[in-house]
Image (tube, rainbow, N blue to C red; front, side):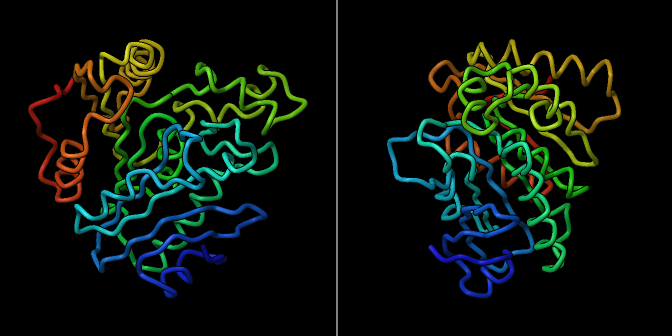
Length: 266
């Protein structure tokens, strides 16, 4: 994998490849497949299995099934220690990785003349929070969130992450000092959020989806969020299926509306 200092230079080198961006002393692994489309999908990763060599670019295979340009990201925090599977692009106390990659993407899309309304940021599980952070920098864009952690510090991976990325900080200090990195309610912006939740994923349904939905309905009625629920015991916290996800991706980017037979808008 080659190293570059911005995504534009990486695109000039090749329209389809994997590479690292060096930015503010952080190396960001990126998969890019540019097809000349005016529309883009940015995939942010969920939990990463350590059974495969890193980095892993989740859903990058979807690029073969769509005509849109694709970027798939990998959380650089997971390169720090092999014990980590989730880090939410939270970075370290001095370096907030989600903020850095948001800045890199914003600069790239601006230089390419991409309209934000033609950008879909797709994040499931641990990819939800970085997806929201990226969309904050891209007003008018759309976020697909699937079974995400809206409050990272309620997840079992959070205490495992602290001693690696936030050494010498307690759980409470980490949350209090960096709440904006770990709570979806701190990441609102002028973007559209389409939130899918499997009711069979009971932990995320109860601890992440329902509290966030209630907060949006009572505290932020002007937030452009659309909730969809489905009940699929076979997939649980995992993907509802490649076919179903690609169908929704096409609907979002073609602006034809979100319609399917497997979920219900709530």
